[in-house]
Image: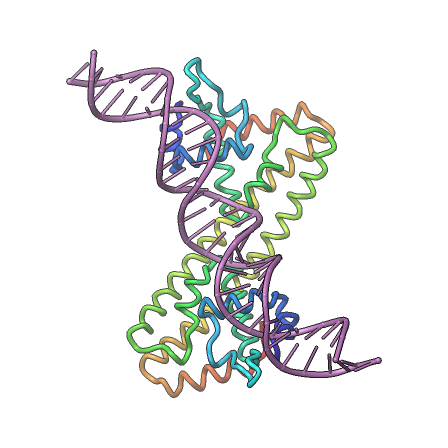
Length: 137
Length: 137
DNA sequence: ATAAACTATGAAGTGAACTCTAGGGCAAGC
DNA sequence: GCTTGCCCTAGAGTTCACTTCATAGTTTAT
C-alpha cells in the first residue's frame, strides 16, 4: 500500500503519516521502502494508526504513545512500566468519566437557565442566584 | 483580591490569568483596576475561572468558552444559539463517555497481554494474534 | 516524449494555549 | 533611602500537532 492509499483509508493526510513516522510511531513492521524509495505500508500500519487515533482521542500525546505502543520490541524492564502506565490511564479515564457526569449536571443547569431566560428573565435571574449561593466547584 | 492571590487560589499562574483576560474570558464583573493600576478580582472571578477550568477539562477551546460564558451580557438572538450549543455539548459528552468505555476495553486487553508477557511470552503472542484476527477499530 | 499525478526531502509556517523576558512602577520592611 | 517583592505592559519564545512550501525524482497516461 502506498502512502496516499493509506491516507485515504485512515482519513489522514500523507503529511500526517510521514510526520508520525518521523515521530517514531511507525517502524519496520509498518513501513518499508521500495527500490524507488517510495514507502510501502503493511496491514499492521492500518492497525497501528487506528490505535494511535484511539489513544489520541482520549488525550494522549504522541510522545506518550510512542513510549507505549511498542509490542514486540520492548524489553522486560519497560514491561512493568507499561503495565503501570496502563493502570494509570485506566484510573485517569474513570475519573474523566466522573468529571463528564458532573459536566452534564452543569450543562443541565445552564440549559434550564437559558430556556427560562427566553420567556421569563426574572425567574431566570433568581435561578442563577440560587446557584451562586452554593459553593460547588 | 490581587492577582497572585487569585493565582494561588486557582492553581494558575498570574500570566495565565492575564492571558485569559486578554482573551476576553474575564470582564468588569471579575476584574477592576485600583488607582495604582493593579488588578483587583471579585469572588465572581473565582467562580468564572472554575467554570473555565471545568469546560476546558472537557476539551472546550478558549474561543468557544468566550462565546458561551456570558450570563448577563447576552441578548435574545444569541440565547437560542447558546441553547443549541449546550445541547450539542451534551451529545458530545455522551458519545465521549462511550468512547471512553471502548478505550477501557482496549486498555484491559493491553493489560492482560502485558501481564501475560511477563511470565509466558509465548501465550502472550497467541493472545496478541487472536486480537489481530478480529477487525474491530 | 511530454505532461499530469504521484512520490521524496528538509525546512518553514500555523494556531492554540500558554510561558517567559525586558523594562519599568509601586509598597513594605529595615 | 534602599532592597525586596509585588504589580504593570508589550512582545518574544515554547510546545504540540500538524500543515504548507520549495524543490526534485518517479510513474503513468496520452
